[in-house]
Length: 217
Image 1 (cartoon, rainbow, N blue to C red):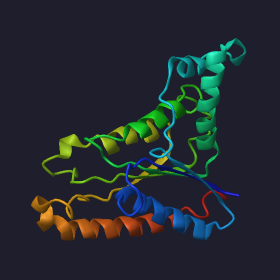
Image 2 (cartoon, helix red, strand yellow):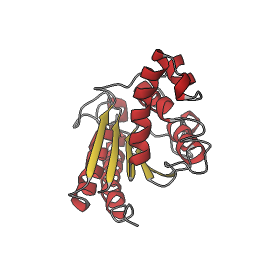
Image 3 (tube, rainbow, N blue to C red):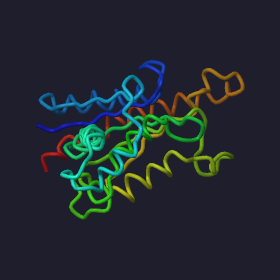
Image 4 (spheres, helix red, strand yellow):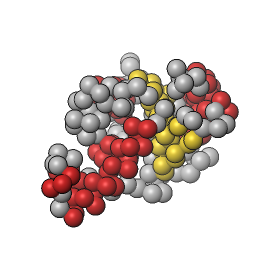
């Protein structure tokens, strides 16, 4: 049975979070195509994973037979996250922009699953095949040609991680201008926000359906 690994990192619940609304639409469409499939949902806001520790880091480069008790315990937790990623047929990540970057909880997850010689830097890495879809929501617009184009560190960073370091098939869905309905100074941008939201929801459903047969291929 195919497995979808669904990661959310927004501090806001569904209905108040643009990224969660879009990941929920993706997940629903994926489940329609795979009613027998498995969804592993990690809500990093509700249940943060540990930040990488010295024990967890050094254990990744040491023979398990030589692990100290602290290394063994720390690496066991890290290994759960790595194996979830390795065993997924598709990966869905909600990555809202906070202060021009990703939430620290998502960074902690990435620090755990990026392991040189296994998930990164290995020709036989199991994470190279499954497609990764990132919902990169943001309150404003950081698209090419906009005044804040140079402040776009979410897509640029995640592209370096997933496409370059991990070698995954990466795609972005970008709902933008999400602060327009809440900021009077952005009132004239509400129609653009609404169009962006609808496009993101449609893209999520379309992308999920397009991936439906891919795991079995």
